[in-house]
Image (cartoon, rainbow, N blue to C red; front, side, top):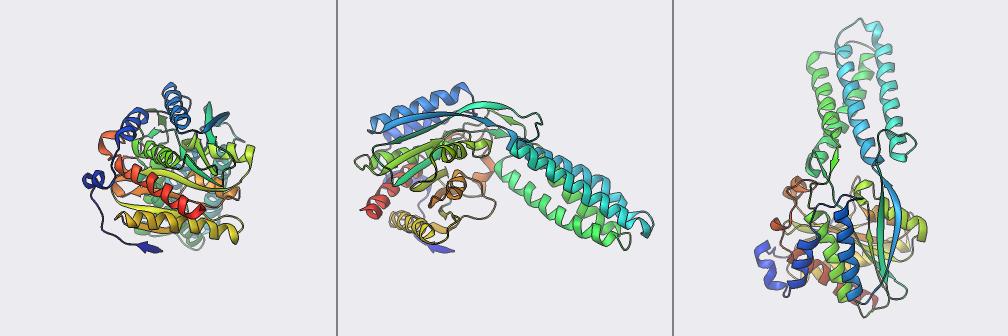
Length: 389
């Protein structure tokens, strides 16, 4: 990991270094409303985005596609299935003669395999398990032939657990499953002591039960995730309005498994580089995350060039910047774009308190200083002007 250290300005001080936040503040308040994919409120937000891009001199296009809640349902299926299986298996790990060991192990491995296949089938849409399908929209804009795309997603969602809660649930479930496999292997030879089996089963049940709470509603204003990202992309686009090599991509249904990015790359392929803005809180450090493409040669180097240019600009504004590869398990639009062969980075900002409010009704504009997103957008403009010449 590379750190570009600078003095950190508290959110209240950001406005001093980022003048003229008039229209961005009004725009953030306009789009930071609950906007689940398919909702009427999202259409109003999309209209505001189109209006702003047109005012900045871009030619705007809109593509419709069908999005599904199947990725969210698959997480619920996996959590519930693993949790119930662990609940049933835990007593069998402790009681019974040694001769039952193979039977218990085979039952456990077979059940976990079946649940995994069912979850994958739901994610891929091969199995319909109460999924909801909606019409969504990608908005993209350009002037001529974009060499770099400014990307952000327009939608929001709320769930019974915050993003931070889901991170903990996944970690607990993964740890529980790993230990459960160890326990099943040991059970082949002998029954296990309760002080080992119960904690393993409890971790798996607790993590799976929490992850199964995947009911989606339209209660989150999504100020951080991702009204600030949209704002940063539009601020950057406005600062680069005289260039012909900049494009803007505002994806829909990112919260439904990055469906918008998948639809766009499927239709237009992976051409150019990208800079993806996703969740820019006014606390914590900026994180510039480099995406790995399938061809780890020239394209990987180009992504690192964008990262270095952007990190340098933010550091020059007195911000602490962490520049690193995208950690495994982080799911953002940039992952889909990178898989299509586009080099690029994702920019975010936040801390643990940010994760605690994302995907909840508490993610509102009154807790976010708009200057953090404005600073990100203007730093992007300066970085790309320097990088592209």
